[in-house]
Image (cartoon, rainbow, N blue to C red; front, side, top):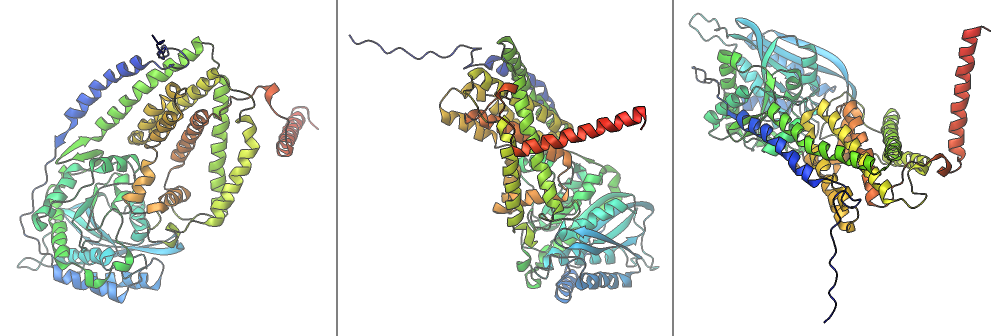
Length: 622
């Protein structure tokens, strides 16, 4: 009888091979029952405002002729050019016959890809019984790569036609019937370059604006869309969105296409839009964009006057007029901004989603705190691992500072804190010298600081566990910072914290398991570049465009710091998985200082002596 092969026993709980308490992790998920119940009760239907009594008088054929005229006579309407000035004068001349006063706002601003240019917003006002305003807006500029017939001569032409509808006499006495609210017909500049004109209007805000409708590329072949994303994690009033969708459906007999549930979550987690409703929604003004384009406007070279769809222009122009009439008679029901996500014909309240995200962090924190206590019970020192994480954080801060230094040197595009125009040459042109120089600087910085991070001796299992525990505690701090700045952004963090929590458990297993868990956790942070690549059609240029958003300041500095801190935690977990982790060295383990470190030390000591001497002179006199 042959001897039986002994079975491999599973490591016991609480050992170095199984330091995590899986039962505690599963039990913590019971806390999610209440947030899920609240989430279910937060789902509700949204009604729409009543349709206006008078039928729309929008002239689609006349609007198409205006769009063709603007695109043909002034095909180059890039801000700051002669064509842009002529297009502004054209808008004034079209409004003049209707007797509506036109106001001009000129200013100079730094625009990505253009430099310092003069821009010009124009608006015509049809006074109402109330000074509270409803704004209908459209940008009249284009990117210069084509005549901009659909984007956005069509929106500008519809704006002129709507102004005519509310300015012409419509009674036997020849007097215009005054609307309940003041109507503002706003023609912005710089819309194709990051909604610069809309941001300027919001900054000045010469009216008390209650709602806004933006018309952008409304004569294309695509299905009607309503865009609601803001520059902040907010959404326009759900009644406004539903009213706009209902009026479009009544005129075009086409259901308005909405983004998927997941795409809406991404838009709240990373607020980004190329349309002009963004600055208004961020300011708290409910605003929607009506368009036939996707998340990214159509390429300018294919935007020719002959391709304008008169039927689509007519239906969406009439829809805009109907939305305007509905708002005028019932705007008080559609004010304000909030946060929500459409799920079919219902909405899920944003605060309920935030509550659920917060609750999903609890199992992670419960187990991480237990892991920390486990290390304390076993006498495993966390301090050297925390110092190692601190050194990594300093390096990642150095990465951010080096990126900022190269910005001052002109390596990255400069401009105001607005998204760079997607059609700019810089969007697809990676600056080789800037990225190469940054890589060299970072490589030098790594070689200077690496002596505290690379192994100098065999690292014990206890030290590796301490390194993972410190990194997981760091991820917990990062998640709390995310929660404090934008709770919706936890969408990018939750996959990482829940998957990487198990890295200490699989560290002693087969290498593929470690790397599968590590790579799978990156799915959350990669959502942003993948969204830019796929939804906004930036493709492989998405990482570079994301860097441009950081360079111009569209990505806040606090967000950039959180990303860098998360990078330090990821680096430490990767080092442990790759077997390249080392705890912060004790004094006797540190190598001799090299010439660069010796120079830095000498400069620091000299500055310290100078300060001491100065303080002594102040204390005792010369």
